[in-house]
Length: 216
Image (cartoon, rainbow, N blue to C red; front, side):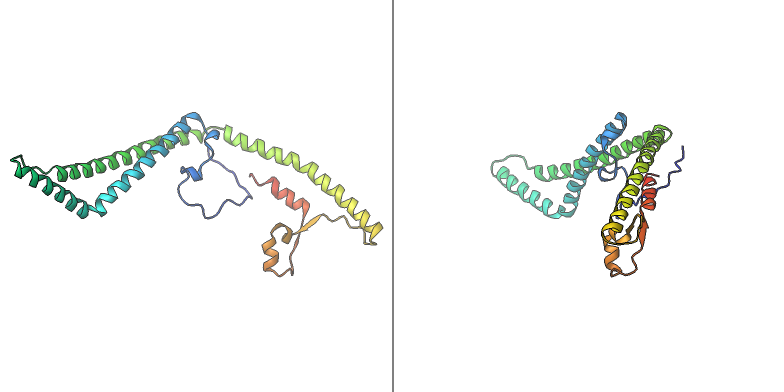
């Protein structure tokens, strides 16, 4: 099902990263259980992958120092073993190499697991695109906005008529029921940039009409 949604609302700018990251996705309470389960697993495995990558990077960046330390530890242990006629070994160096290989294997496993879960997430997400309930929910929300707009505009009209009458009686101003706001009232920094000169007025009806289209 291809979406034909258009919208007047301005989305956030400067958003970075893919949409499945926690900062870029809906609250989990809004999503189907099977998708929540996979996204939770994705977060958990991604965290483990990040830790594995840090561990592996530490071995890579500090390998020489770690190896020298292990060699010194083996030398000390072997010196004592030689004095007592015990076998010579490379326990510390062998342990260091084993730990590095384990870190590499963990990183590879976590990376593959993330890919597997990611693919499962997108299979479910693609299937959900065909579910009409999401478009229906958006349309229902749009309808509520339109229903709320009419009484709001009527209330604004009544308020401006009352204000116009008061101004005519108490201030001697011409009777004027214009219901409009300066763009500077809506976007203060715009008025500041224009120095208060030439800031246009926008009718309330136009503002409300734009708001009724904010969800599409």
